[in-house]
Amino acid sequence: MAKDVKPTRKNLMEIEDRIELSERGHGTLEKKRDGLIMEFMDILDKAQDVRGDLAQDYEDAQKKINMARAMEGDVAVRGAAAALQEHPEITTESKNIMGVVVPQIESSRVSKSLDQRGYGIMGTSARIDEAAEAYEDLLESIILAAEVETAMKKMLREIETTKRRVNALEFKLLPDLYESQEYIEQKLEEQEREETFRLKKIKEKKEQAEKEEREAEEEAEDEVAPEDEGGDTAEPDMEQSTAGGVPGGD
Picture 1: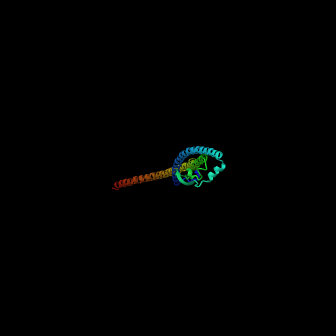
Picture 2 (picture 1 turned 90 degrees about the vertical axis):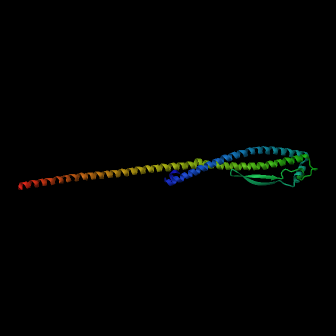
Picture 3 (picture 1 turned 45 degrees about the vertical axis):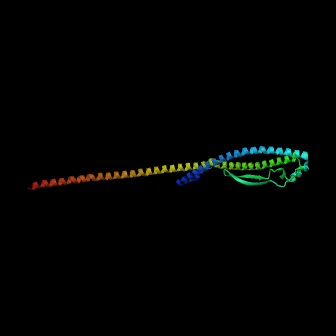
């Protein structure tokens, strides 16, 4: 990925912005993951208790229904079950746990009194009443277990999704961005060194040219100076010869 990026300062700034954003996202996802795990552990503890209660309620219900069948007969038990008039009602709502929507199940008309079960009190025995009560408790445990198990599965699925995102940022995206950042910085440093070296060479050539120009000017001045000196000495000689000739004429 690094070599696919052009080593420009604009791209470097964009990558630095992406790194900053990715690091913030990584930190947020880590906090979310840790919070989800804590919530999941609480739900898991509750689920274990619910499972234990469910298993116990199921065992008790089976024992009591078997006892009622043995004592009252299958026909009496089935007749009491068929006499039920009001069936349980279940409503579902939702609640948000760390961004995860989990179901909240509310039940009504599950546990009933003797006169609400529909069968005649005189035509049944305490064995059937105990079996009916045991199955009401079992149904409440099943509803609670369904709520907890569904919440646990959704939490676990969200934890796995969040962990994958954290790992993708930590082990894929961020390393690639760091690599691209380092690659661009190295290329820019190389370009800067090359530019500095080029400017240094230009400066050296300019200085060399100026030096050669100065030397040429000095040589030219040295050549002109002797000619000027020779011209100055010739004039006094002429004056002297003239001065010497005048006395001779006298």
